Length: 92
Image 1 (cartoon, rainbow, N blue to C red):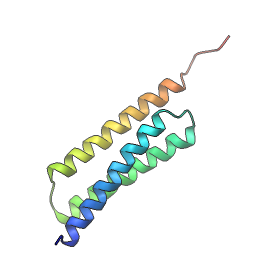
Image 2 (image 1 turned 60 degrees about the vertical axis):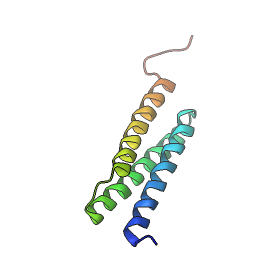
Image 3 (image 1 turned 180 degrees about the vertical axis):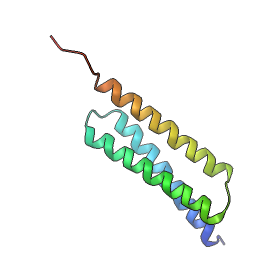
């Protein structure tokens, strides 16, 4: 049977995976609200993972990998949102 700490980490990892999935959807959206929502989900997931690491005083490979995925997703989202909204281009 899992203890409370394991359940908390599992929940934090689940939230992180959901955030990564949402970013994939947001990358295909030109809607700024969807992109902002994805950014909020990434922040929430990162906060959950960091809280679990502090609370449990551990850093598992799984948590580290999940944090890395979140950071990569953030970078991808930033890149895709800047591409979908180029600055300085005028349509003639």
